[in-house]
Length: 352
Image (cartoon, rainbow, N blue to C red; front, side):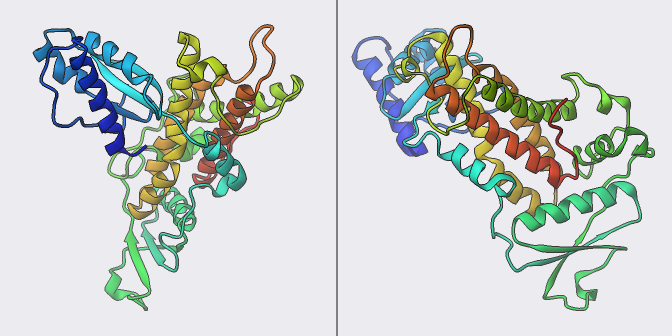
């Protein structure tokens, strides 16, 4: 379903609510849908309930709940969640719900690669400084995922001064230097500390990067990867393996039950994070900003950690097709996390 089609679907729900006397408002000419902002979930979000609340004389969440009940029965929509003051978060149905996991598992660490920059050469020029070295090394790897070739050298060079100015793009990298020697953090944590902030921000070099707690983004990313490996081992012990497909149980497909709806929301959040990985790599390459990839891995990790509890059967529950599909989605997340960490020059542990 395209955003235009989704907008019309929401508009029809508003019109039906007005026709049935549940809302007393003028039906708007159009409804805006967009990707969820921080705090949202699902595939798309709309603030139409907030816009209608005043004219309707109702609280925004009341209007949102009213519309959500109608939208859950609409073709092409797998689920609806109300967040914040009254935002409607929409999960789209997929004709092939396992297609994304299947693609990622088939491509592995190459998922997200493209030929956007095929045939292009880059000359990355940096000062003799540790953060510049690390950023340039990761940028070189990211550029390669988009089909480009890159060479790292020292000293600032104008493109007009290169031997073949028309053959190579000159990138003069000058990230804000680290305030002190990051080597005290060890290889992985020091690289993360230098790569996570944008180039114009000064990196923090402190023991927080070594802390094994939720406040440490690097810990969350590496722990999330380790959890995907543990889920595979645990599933094998229970006698089942991954198989891409519909992550929802049968009653989830009909929209029944808070638990099954929560599974659909968590899966949609992870699906959305994984599906934007190719775009993230392209932007990181074209903007010469590997920090975009580092922050994206945090988003993927957080989505996986919110989804992981749905993967294995609970209690007397038997493994089902939904569990196999959830395991496939979790393993796909693991592949993205491992591949992303590798591009940053950071190890992805099997156990943590």
